[in-house]
Image 1: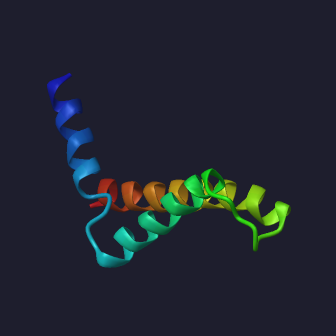
Image 2: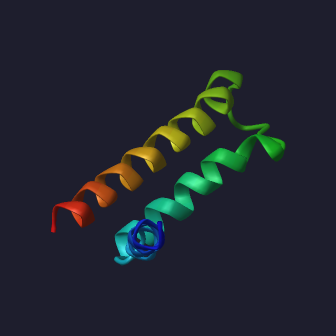
Length: 72
């Protein structure tokens, strides 16, 4: 169990190593919380799709990075 915990923390520590990964995570996070703000200039469809697309992109990036780390 301790070894599994170590592996998980190692993966989590390496998720956002590069500047590109950090920027992607920040943009995805902003997309997820964007409905909390009044988006007057954005259509209702875009306001509904933005958090969904942000979540999907973030999950894709995390999955890709996790696969990359586990492959090494």
